[in-house]
Image (cartoon, rainbow, N blue to C red):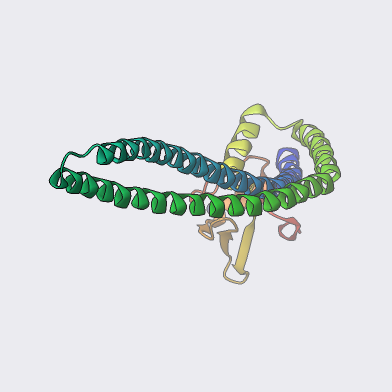
Length: 245
Ligand SMILES: [Zn+2]
């Protein structure tokens, strides 16, 4: 293997470390995010319930106003009752009074229901507030636990990035670009090896996509330092030491 291919193999090794460490970082951060999301959803449901209580209270207020205005008209009917000129008029006013009373008791029942609903919502608010407190404590704990871990991983990533730069030196710019493009496409695996499925029959396949590689291609890899890409998956193909004897 020539110097360019050797550098690419080394770079692939550093690339793998980088990918793995970055994945570790996002896993560690995700643990915190998960707990934060749970906290946020609790806070949201508390706000929803508080809004519902507000609406219920507004409804109670409006029913209360309605009741007061009905009380004052009842008062007027009662005064009218005292001034009734005859039996017929008296009976008519009395009917009105009774109808009004029936309506009032309906409103009163409705208000009782609304108040009961407010109490229920308040109880569940108190419950959610407790859960929020517990969840906040959990968020703080997880954040604290992962703080050191995250900064340690971030430091490690910086180190590996420096190694990556060092390893990429000596690789021509266009080949480096190709490597990066392939790495993006194949989740970090820009380079594939050659598998010998049946040494006696000399059948070679790309370890990335398992497609057959020609003897010609393998010979070229054995004798030159040129970058060869698998015709099927485009990965840069290299031979391991077992080919060099
Ligand atoms: Zn391939």
